[in-house]
Image (cartoon, rainbow, N blue to C red; front, side, top):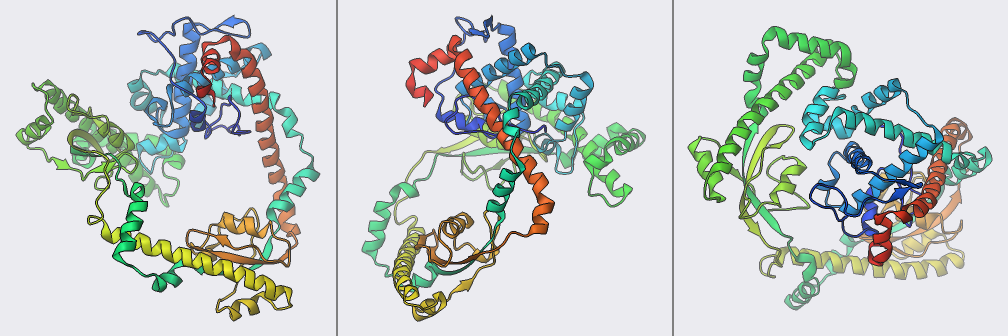
Length: 561
């Protein structure tokens, strides 16, 4: 994918970036008012003095749909975190940027569009839909299996690619001030992030205090009563399903393709895309085997889809509509029917490796619409039907007593560990001030001090923590405590710790010299994105005043915060 624009601040209303779209949900309200043909009543307002036409709005909205799919692997209207208001807002942003680019005379050559489109079809959001071994997807397949089922065309995709390139050009031009970060400033930032600290710690783990916890029936009952909300089970659903396993269609697919045609396809794809599809293959034979599997999987998927559609057509024709129709028809046709255990929308089924769409559709089923259309997965095509709906409830104490007892013990043990850690801090602080070492104070309290490996703000892992604390908590304590001093006791989920900051180590100059050029480039890109978003915020807050979106937000304060 092309580089993305970095979010500047959580308080900005208007940004156009991957990984920040979801955050707009907290600012936006309900979706736009449109009539039956998709046109907004009262029009779409104006941008830069020009009216926004129905055609322009629809095109920009399609661009955003494809943009979201390319970044997240799903359509925005299928994401529970994206409201219609977010979609409308992002559509207006694309319209604004398109107008600005036009006024600046920004144009994108066709060969650049083709090159970037090819790169996009290698993105994980796209390739994972076609199997774990796929590294690049042909445009024809992407169009057939992804875009066309949603009503999008090749022209929509090309327009999206061009618009995405334009956004990058605008960022370069309008965020230029952010790129002017002096090397000296970037060097200071590098030193701050990479200077390591030497420290000792004493950890207080809940497991060491479990034996001290007294478990009584009264205590368990009180703990359960105080935490009933924690034990509430979410709404769950169980579904009957038929899985058309793709491997069952391989033989027919191979026979239909024919040995010569199949071999030619494999050879052609190998010559053009071997490095993308099978980058880890050690030999040409291994690469061709992966490609052969991909070709057969795609052909098998098409064949399985036909059978599934024929079954669904007959299923939907049965009258009256009843969830039992799926069971009846499956038995009639001799198909294997399975039933999932009840599952929540957040976790999905544990007993079937189904795609995310399986869960989303399952929670939309009801007595009036108890069946799904075929659902495509990596290894099978699924048809599902409603089996049971389990409403949210709180299990009784007797049903989950073992779990409640375990939670109570862990909670009490953590509380005892934290009390011990707090007492140790005050005792150790007095002893260290009197001239004793941290290790001596720890041993006197019956604790074992640990010398930690050196770490910095840029460290991403410290295996020695072993789940006893979050690395972020350790960094916070280490880099806010003066050298030679103890941190206050830091409570963690496991108990807590007290830290002695021994020294700040000098930055490795050879490593600094090697990494600084790339670090400077990263800082400049980040600052450039921030500058661009500041520009976009001001531009949108002015231009959107003449749109229904802005008028709705300002008339309903709840949708703007």
